Amino acid sequence: MELAAAHIVTIMQAVQYELVLLAAVGIALLGTEDVAFDLLWLMRRRPPAPPAPMPIVGPIAVFVPAWRESAVLAGTIAAMLDAWQDEDVRIYVGCYPNDAATLFAISPAVAAHPRLRLVIGERAGPTSKADNLNSIWRAMGADERAERAEFAAVVLHDAEDHVHGEEIALFRRTLPGRAMVQIPVEPIIEDGLIAAHYADEFAEAHGKELPLRAALRAGLPAAGTGCAFSRRALVLLALERAEGPFQADSLTEDYEVGIMLGAAGAWCHFVEARGLDGRRIAVRSAFPETLEACVRQKSRWVAGIAFAGWDRLSWSGLAPTQNGTAVPRSLIGAALLRWMLWRDRRAPLAACVILAAYLAMVLTGIDAAGALVGWWQAMPVEGALAVVLMVNAMVMAWRLGMRMVFSASVYGWRQGLLAVPRAFVGNVIHILAARRAFAIYMRQLHTRELVWDKTDHRPIGVIAAVPERR
Image 1 (cartoon, rainbow, N blue to C red):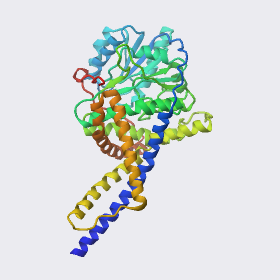
Image 2: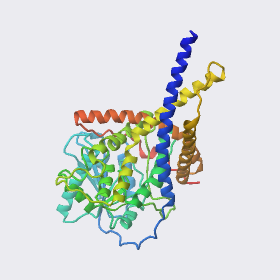
Image 3: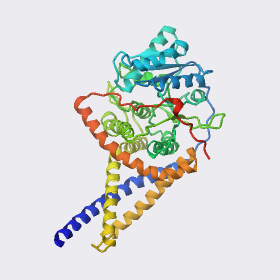
Image 4: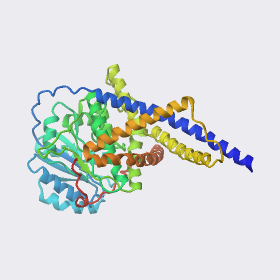
């Protein structure tokens, strides 16, 4: 009996050692890359602001795709119309013929506001979000031909967005000479760790990742909301496909549009500014509160960016074109773009490393408890492994510190401190999402079917305001 127990302990410690080694090496490699990115961001010198170009003039089209959004759509559109009442905008709402609840919810506003245009797609929903956007694009083109006028730009928003009143004016000032402009997205912090962990991720990504990528001209992904495109940029994308500028067979059409524009040499920019009220001009949205909804949303992102993105954009950032042409880039530019694509696509690998780390922590705890009561001798940690684990500790402390700083810069120091426990919650969600993303990708390869796996949203009036920074 004692011999069998000794064998079990030996096997457990062998598995523990392999998991610790895998997690330690993975965290050291991925974490060191993150630190290098952070240092590059810290060393970046912001050049003097160039002379402001003339703002773009003319009407701006706002695309709002919707599928089963009867609970929030009317409130969102009413808030947009009120916030932009002095702006020359036309809001296009894309719906489906088999979504009666959403159609009934938005129809009174469409009848009352001439700046609101309802677009009912030709196909029953849900198709993909990109297919919905392409339907809106074609409707906008029909309006332009009928009115013999062109829109100056296209802005994308989601059906649950809280918009800032100065957003359109900001796009008018910053879009000239650029293909795309993205403003920050601020998840609304509510009770619970699941929904609130989005706030930490977006605060860091839109405070550091996207600004640096825009400065390096190394592929700036669009967030799908709070982003403006020049009409010319979308026309160039639409030349490659008959249905419109967005990839109808993509799970992450917004990400792909931004990457393709940047890879083609177009100037995509990230802008952070404050309005006259002192608040950051950003898009504020509520994110999923339940574990199931959160995993479903993030798995769609991972499947579209990490798995399908590799197939669709390869490592050049460009989708295959009809004439097979490629855009030449400098060696440094190509290397930077591939680095950013790697950072976008490493999520499944990072999930495996995190899972190994958590399993190693459990086994290490069991091993330490057994050694504490004298049942066996704990696995020794020495030599190179001890050095790597020390590096891991420093890297993790650095990364958590950065997350805290960025979260606190947007939401205040209390939320910055809560970013630490939320990071562990986010890791668990990341593991579950990567597993589901792989299943989505394999199913898509097998069936070639794509549907809009959207997130359900609550009415706009129930959502609390974003806390002021303290």
